[in-house]
Image 1: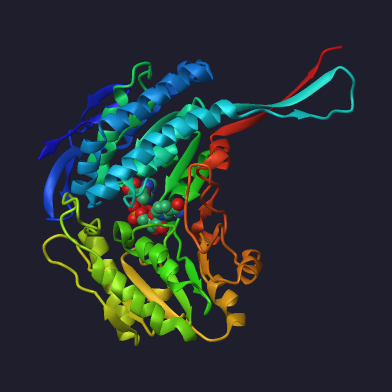
Image 2: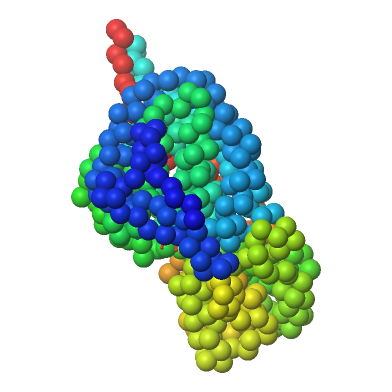
Length: 476
Ligand code: NAD
């Protein structure tokens, strides 16, 4: 059992109350480590540390900060093996994926440093002579980050890197079930020479206590949150009395449209990978598939062949493709959706088994599904493909748009014109046609329906961590 402390103001500390809680290994359901249970007083200490560090860090030049960000990237690469192993132990990510995730996390720091250095202000036209008006980009201040368990390391990097690149200071609360991963991240970056104490603070605790204290703290300027839409609503309410800026990356139930002329092999390679990688716990992954009846059986058969090929098991085994889900609670929730769909008339084509030892669910394919089934209406967030046949292409946009969410949509067709015509009709924040990728340059997130507010990643995401200060100078 690992015993860890929290990282506040450059020091490793326990909770003021002395309280702790355990995290589990999802492959075995056994306790893995003990971490502090932060409450409002601990959150306050972390926020005060971040506030004190802000003038120092934001006062450094971009070049000085970038040297620190490059050191952080190098440290993440140096410690990638330990970080990836822990991500397997506490989250269940197969080692080969987790190692790649750590490399991606390192890159986020380098990319953010370069992108921050390339940001420019704007000069604005004014009617008066000898008057200059321009926009000066300034850091927002102290940012509270609350992250989800589905991609613990990359979610930390995608938030922290651009925020601190621009001179902001941060208090991060990782998901309670992946607290060790958050603290490991803090340990690695704390070794970066030149990083002032208090710029990054990591506290561990529950969402309802530590998360809520962070979201409502009067000296936090902005909340960057990724998680479910329900939690997002609580956080918005907690942040409202002090009118904080918020960037919210929330839930999705992403439609996939498979036209009869789609390249099915190419589609399976992308979609089935996305469906089962990380045990289906991806916000950008497929949520419900509308498959044209002419190719429905062929698509389902190919999906099954893919699912059969996967090796499920201990994430530390480098040949394993899929590990467990993150918790017993989530395993039971996903199993409930599978059983509910079967009760509603769906056919279990493959998988559907939940383990008692550990939190595994085998890759699952449900056929003969309908748009009105709960499994098609709600976000399952697991390794479960919900295949719905369709006949009339004219109906498909209405079905795809009929959701409380609007995160993204996937379209597969060889008729690029038909695919392109859907871009404007699909009420979502991102459309992927015959591919799916998310790079450092691409912004992610949307303000559509209950899927969030604002952007993360790319230059659009970077700008969220700045305030555009208007300056007007008369130099007559
Ligand atoms: P969650 O909402 O349960 O928890 C997310 C974080 O919020 C955790 O750190 C948790 O401790 C904290 N939290 C919980 N209650 C809180 C409260 N009342 N106040 C403050 N903080 C609180 O989400 P999850 O189950 O960890 O993650 C899965 C969800 O995240 C899915 O809905 C998924 O779609 C979403 N997600 C969205 C994106 C995106 O980019 N849109 C990316 C990844 C995950």
